Length: 204
Image (cartoon, rainbow, N blue to C red):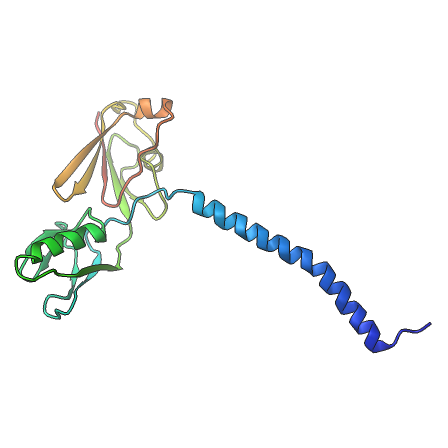
């Protein structure tokens, strides 16, 4: 018995729909699980911290004269109207926004400030001292101090593993973070991640 072509087409569409439906539902469930897993995974790095060379847009609400573009200078500072020099390197945009707003309260009533990072320089840190290949290391992906030392070719034979220092720019100046390589290799504590502009010093 022959099946009418139109009926055959309908039957084929019904079979295809019944076959595809479970797969579609499974895909949706998988997407939900993936999204939930991503949301549950904490970020490795804190919010972006500015460094020399970053280009900023600073907006003061309803004040075109105070709103301007600025670039973080090599000394880590930006120059703003009324305020003058202000340290930006090592701060998050929110921290810089709050500092600008606080300074402007002397001249403006309840200033509303927005800080936007328009363009960033390549994120790098530096490793120097008793390593086999001193120089800059790329921080485009999160990098721990142990990984940075590996990128720098590892420690030399006479390196002082216990007294490695990380020099980090902060709003109050340069902060020194002590790092014991030997202890870090043995412990299960949280790793120390480098930030743009950090300098790792390995003494002998």
